[in-house]
Length: 208
Image (cartoon, rainbow, N blue to C red; front, top):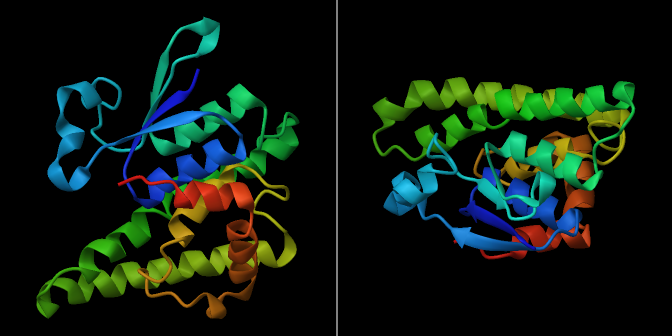
């Protein structure tokens, strides 16, 4: 049975479509148009009580019973556990996956997300402070990633769900007003990820 993916064409949504493609899991997309407040509909709130996309319903969950999962990081962890892919079994190897997944969830997502917000404001006086603050922090995070990738092919050493999580937001680097040429190791990693056939399919699938 396939997994029902409730999502929209956003960085967090793309994380999951990429992971599903990389894990070769069958899935059906259900578009939740957040520009029309569809995330507040009772049926969606039943599976995503925080009214945020993405969310999934695995019709073949543990014990064969359906299971819903919300929050993109939790979904990635669930899918990795379900398939045994992109999450090492060895605890020492798992730690960097968890570290870089949390790095994305806590920083490289919320911070460029604020750039998305402030850059769209029409009045200069409304956007000046916030855009300056969050752009500076976003560039700092790109710098952290660049230093990590200088010595590692992928964020956790080997390809993992942490890469899928970070890629969803790096995909919007132009909207962050970030030139990847300034971060050559991120650029190398980004181009290598986007060249992967399954990852490419994850970005091509219609989510809106």
